Length: 271
Length: 317
Image (cartoon, rainbow over all chains, first blue to last red; front, side, top):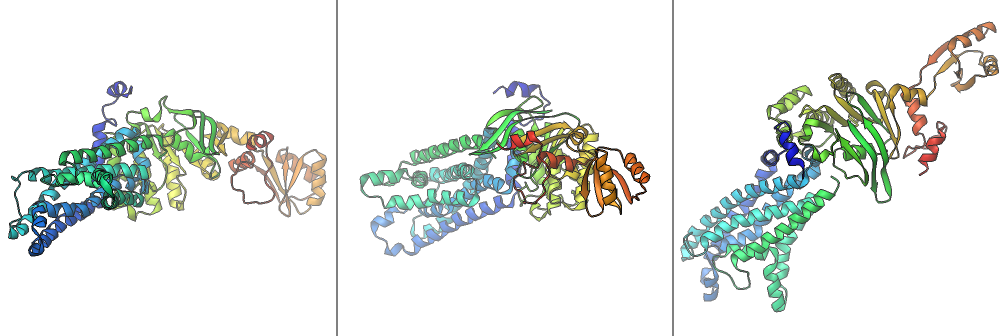
């Protein structure tokens, strides 16, 4: 781009990346849906963590030795994430589909016509917001379940092997989900269609994968987006799943691919 | 200065804008006139870099829109009445746009005052009427205090008060030396506001000319004559070689002569006249003559205006 040199000589205020970031930050914090989506996601994940911690505790006497051994301090959280993570995807979708739905996208792109930069600014803001919110949710869901697990001595602490990584990784995973959802929202452009797509990718695929037969089925199942991503939530690598960082890395790769497709389509399509 | 050269947009087999050449000169109000579906909005979206031209090119001040450093400071645009997210307040909506171009937050309140929305600055946009949304859109266009303004059908759906407000605003913006490019299918509105005209029909530019010239070229003046003895008068008029068209039951339109000659002729023969009025050609008449063939959805009314041969030939494509 030749714009950099020309922009330097221009009147100082211009559509720089910092200004577009500031604009996107203003956008995300000035629509009520951001707060309500984050609140819903937090309630589901924290609430289900407590609920499953209680369920493990209540049914502890009926579990055999193997089942008991498979419960880790982050087990309730893992299950809760499975139900709640798609809500953080909804936030990522809304950041762009809300603009398409209202016609705001045309006002926005008239103010900032360099579309790759525009989408990058959205991705940074969404990732930042959901990372912070996701870390809070992840740590809260861990801490809320420990006192309940303690009843049967199933609890643990952040100092235990792999636990801090699991809880911290939970926040990272949610941020990646939101960025992937932003990409899907950009590709699909409709709120409902994007959310259904997110739901299929994060929820339905994971269930379908569980029914795949044979060793190829088990291998493929590990690489399905939600299964790969949630590997980070287990303190110790579980059988039938990728290693924690490898799993999150695979999910990050999917996110990058979706975002790349989104940028290409976003730049070539009419707004 | 907006300059379009061979600007073309096709959607599949349908050509929305067909090799359009036109310019919007600085410091004038240029009207962009055409029937519904003629390609006005598509052309405006291409100018703003929202739609990608299939062929050809359009520049703003010599640059492609996407290369403008701070677009809002160079061009302000109102494309559609509702272009704000419902959950956001009017002030925050404007701040979001302003910040992307490094425009300070207080400018949002300034433009809200300018369009008379300061009382509802803190209200969610979803509760706005069409007129209020339109004003908010105009506030957005004015954020960067740009020398060029583009309004797409700004008076559509507005009440008389809103229409008067927009008309006054456009005149005021032009008086400040700004370039205004305003599209409409409302002739009376155009005649009141525009100095220059770009006329489009079925995606083709039919005229790019001064308003006065456009009317003089495409419509003729005539004299309206009302008389109780038309049957006696008409043969006398025709005998002088003037064209006479009927106008209602007791009047005719006479072409090709000033009113005094008709008055004298009638007096010479003792024929009473109840009305003798020179009628200046209207923009509407000029426009209908030029675009009669290019209206996309005809209502199928009989007695359509005659079609100039050059337009008829071009419009067949």
